[in-house]
Amino acid sequence: MIEARGLGWAHPDTPDRPVLAGLTFTIGPGLTLVRGGEGRGKTTLLRLLAGDLAPGAGALVRRPGRALRPSPADPACDPQRARDWLLDQDLPALQADPAAADPLLAALGLVEHIDKPMFMLSTGSRRKVGLLAAALAGAPLTLLDQPFAALDARSCRVVAELLADAAASSTRAWVIADHGRSHWLDDIALAGVIDLGD
Ligand SMILES: Nc1ncnc2c1ncn2[C@@H]1O[C@H](COP(=O)(O)OP(=O)(O)OP(=O)(O)O)[C@@H](O)[C@H]1O
Image (cartoon, rainbow, N blue to C red):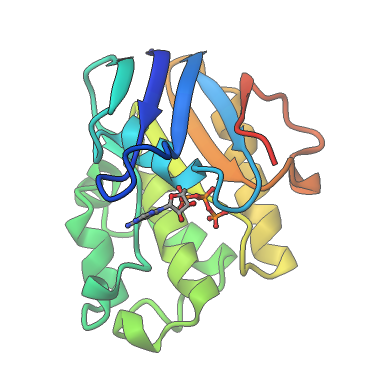
């Protein structure tokens, strides 16, 4: 599904200090964890996998198909109603049935927030809107940065269920980035771990 050989990337301002260098891995269906300490390049790698950044070195081969990396925390979304942001994400399940989001809206405690502008939502609620998009997209490749960050325990359980489903998929790949393996993943079989070091 994704193959990286000697993948590297450096910020244009600091070409002599690459953020990522010499990464070789394959990502198949199921759930893959990108782990690494602060500033080790987790978000950069997700951006490369999404196609938002071009590799600076090496090769990255991705099977064609949509890669979804929801970014509801982007300040550009501030004035937008959360529901409108969601609709803008081109989610087939939601287009087919406007009520498709309702069970997850309730499970994530978002019902009272979904019609507010994004700037009024807490960090956690904003992240939950992104998780909702990921759940409804059914994309061949879904990329999530720190899926449990800033969430209450109830929402973490819902996310763990989503990720358990993702881990069981034989056709779709989900890649999550985090500082380590969250205890919420204890009962979930990972397809792989890409370790960027501490
Ligand atoms: N615009 C930039 N100019 C220079 N360096 C940058 C820029 N953006 C990111 N970096 C550097 O790239 C490195 C990797 O950043 P990245 O956000 O990918 O790491 P991360 O592992 O996701 O970090 P965190 O754990 O803090 O979320 C960091 O050292 C960061 O300082």
